[in-house]
Length: 395
Image 1 (cartoon, rainbow, N blue to C red):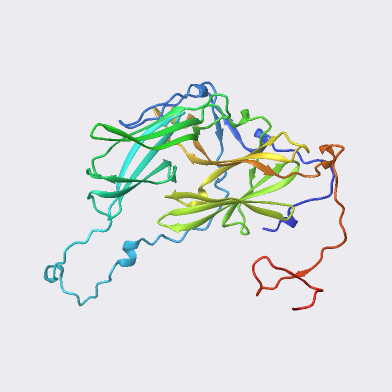
Image 2 (image 1 turned 120 degrees about the horizontal axis):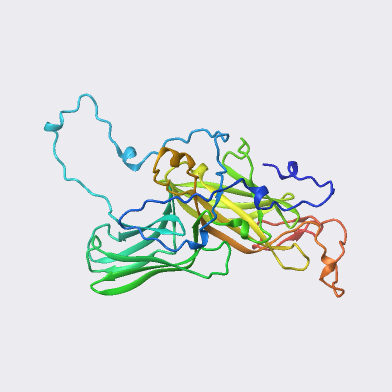
C-alpha cells in the first residue's frame, strides 16, 4: 500500500467529508421482529429504537473473494502419537493413569440489551489448575455472534469454596441519555455472592453496545468507507476517510496469537505520514478473522485553526442472532441485523489539510526555515541520545 499513489494534490477544490448516506448503504425497515432468548435471558429497555431501525450492509459481501485460511492445529493434534501397524491391540496395552491438564470453570450469562443479544463469560481459573482452596483469577469477556472480547482487567481472589458452584449477578443499567448514538451507553456490574456475602468484582461505566444504532444522528460525523479487498492489502482492512479536508486511510490489521486469539491494530496514513493509533485490541474469533467488520468515523472538535482536531470512534460490528421465522413470507421479509460495540476512541486526533494558522491571532510568531536540513552522523558507541555533527572532528 503506497500512499503516494493514492493522494491527488492538484488543489482543485476541497474534499467533502462523506456523510452518513454516502459512506454506507442503508436499508430502513419498520418491520418489527422478535428475537428468541433462552430461559436465562433478560431484556433491557430499547424503546429509543421503536419506529425506526438502521441496517448497515456488511462490508464483506460475496464480491470479496478471500483465499482459505490454513487449518488450525490444536495442542491435542500436536501431542497425538501415531500408532504403528505392529502395535499390540488396545486390550493388551498397559494401562496408564489419565492425567488431566489445568482446569478452569466457565460461567455463562445471557441478556438482551437495546435489541442486542449478548453473552457474558466469566472464567474462574485456579492458580494450581485444580479446584482446591487458594488463589484464583477471574476474567470477564463479552461475546456477540462468534467474536469475544475481554472486559476490564482480570481480578485475583482467594477462594476457600468450591469454584464449580459459584453464583454471580451480571447486569446492565442505562447510562447518560444525552449522548449519541442514543440508547447504546450502559454501565456494567458483576457481583460474586458467596455464603450470603456479595463482592463486586467488575464495574464498567462506558460499555457502548446496541443493535443497529442510529449513527446518522451523530452531528457532523464523517464515516470511513471500506476499500475493496486487493492483493496488496490481503492482510488488512483499509478504510478511506476525509478528516479535516485531508484524505486519510485507517488501516486495521490482525495478528494471530494462538487458540483463535488475535491482536488487532489500527494505523492511520495521510500524505505519506502515519502512525499507530490503536495497538492492542484482543479478540477471540471462532470464524475467519478477515470477516470481522468495523465502523470508523470521526467528528470535528471546535479548534483554532478550524478543522485541526477530531474525535475518532471505532466500533466492532457482528451479526445479531437471526429472528425466529413465523412463516415463509415473514422469513422473506426479515432484515439482517447487526450488533455494534465501541471498542476504541480518541478525543485528540490532530490532523487537517491547508490549515489557516494565521487564524490563531495577531500575536502569532511564525518561524522561518534557516536553510536545508543538516545531516547528523550518530555515533552508535556513544550513550543513547548523543549525536555528533558530520563536520566536527572525531575525538
